Image (cartoon, rainbow, N blue to C red; front, side, top):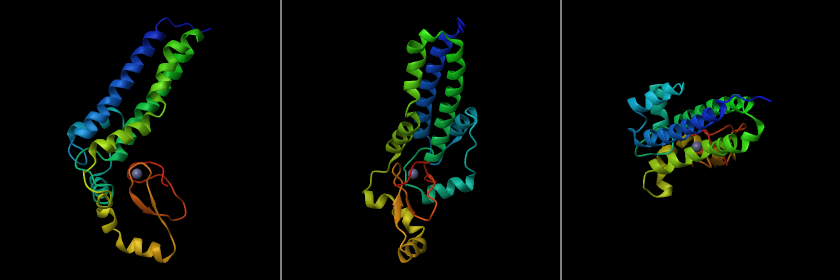
Length: 187
Ligand SMILES: [Zn+2]
């Protein structure tokens, strides 16, 4: 049985890193200028995440759910997914190096922290950066940019679907992948 004496302290360190980094993603992501700023870009770089290109950022700002401030939801998702992925690979190494009976004490709390972390972070980010306007006007911007598309959809009998996470509208067209603006499931 593996018994690396440094494994428990590495587990404690990992949990601390996950907690601190997920908090930074929320704080920096919600606190930065609309569409991101230098501090947000630095955090993405630190996490090995490639941001959207400037023109893609502009398009997301124009077409995605309207926000008053903060980083773009899809970049927040990539950032927290990077934390999740890195943490799970470290956790795997630590778990293998640790005595089985230490699992409940050191491994379970990290698994618990990671469980649902990505979706929770996206939702927290969206609610922290939402514009205080009526529901119907939130996405007026997005709809206004695609009037012919919506018209076409209605004519062709296609239904409009909404992202369950950020509410961005989209016309249902065959393959229904994740939401382009936040990476969430569409309903
Ligand atoms: Zn979405």
